[in-house]
Length: 228
Figure: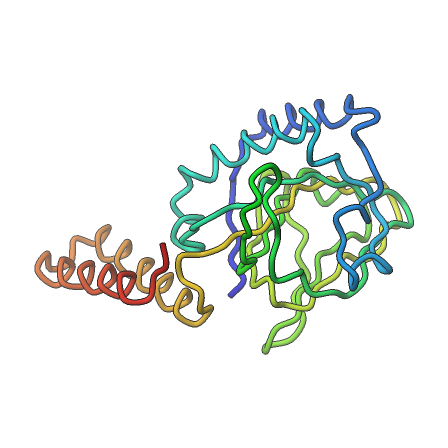
């Protein structure tokens, strides 16, 4: 399930993050430092050292916004979030086809996080760079994603995906992974669809008894399928 989540952060927050990244200096490192065996040979970008103060500060800002974004909660039902990281692609940079690693160790905690969902938050508008599409393969074909700054795409971490070469400008982004309370992608999709239907019925003022029953069914399914 690919879900676009709009206005995760405001234009003012985008500007703040970009200013902090522009002044980060030596905190920018080779993106391969966090790539696994499969990803390292095809990863050609830069990213902020995830242990740096600027990464932790900006990551906390992003998480604070996510925690109050209803569409994000509905689509992901997050159990754990890997601390957001920040990257940039200049001209000629790319990230070839790969599948994200299945487990990550959360820094400074030793805790393992299963990567059910991958997330990319765009920090540059599409007209600022050429190339740089996030291409995601699924059972329905290839999807090319290039969103406005402040918008985000979430998709199964098991998907084969890539970032096409930059031919002009600079692509800035924030990326991270999530472990969902609902491990199975098909079950997450059903719950997301059901939650959207509930919200539509709430807005339409449909029969209250039926809506209450549907909400109860939703939460009973979360109880049945969920992990804590």
